[in-house]
Amino acid sequence: DFRPQKEDPYRIRITAGGNLLTYKGNVSTRTADLSTSKLLWNSVLSTKDAKFMGIDVKSFYLCTRMERYKYMKMPLSIFPDHIKEQYNMEANVHNGYVYLEIRQAIYGLPQGGILANKLLRRRLAPEGYYEVAHTPGLWRHVTRPVQFTLVVDDFGVKYVGKEHADHLIRVLKKHYKLSLDWKGSLYCGITLNWNYDERYLDISMPGYIAKMLKRFKH
Image (cartoon, rainbow, N blue to C red; front, side, top):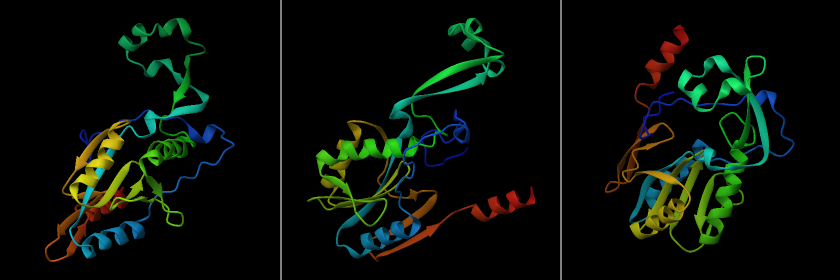
């Protein structure tokens, strides 16, 4: 995949076959939709001295410990020789496969999102941050003028006073590695061009139409 907002935009991920695994608990994760994000952007423009920034949490899912370990197999043939030697894989192969124990979340697990979200709640609650009850993906602080929408690992933050944004950043840095976009120029693949003085925002997705036309041709 190609994610221009990431520090390393070229993405290769190992994934589990989530369709082959069972998880009896709830796997739905409350994330902000586009309407909620747009309402927050309008709130930024209509609030005196408010600004918008983006925070991207690196390896958001991959930092989460599993409640119960899961297992998967991968064909030995896809591993490079130096990896096979490093982990002595030839000694543990069975019918051409090696078997893996999953102790931390990886992409493809149906419970990966909800586990990461629960962990975030536990980490933010003591610092005064909470999710608004009836608006999925919208978070606030009990006293500070900070709000943010959360979509997977992308934080779109409205703040009044940089010191309050810095507080959220310090809290998150205790547990995660972050990438900061103080200009608030990109959120969930949408390019944002802010004009705080005249109180308007231009949003666009450069190259999107060309990308879709290319996909339909194929």
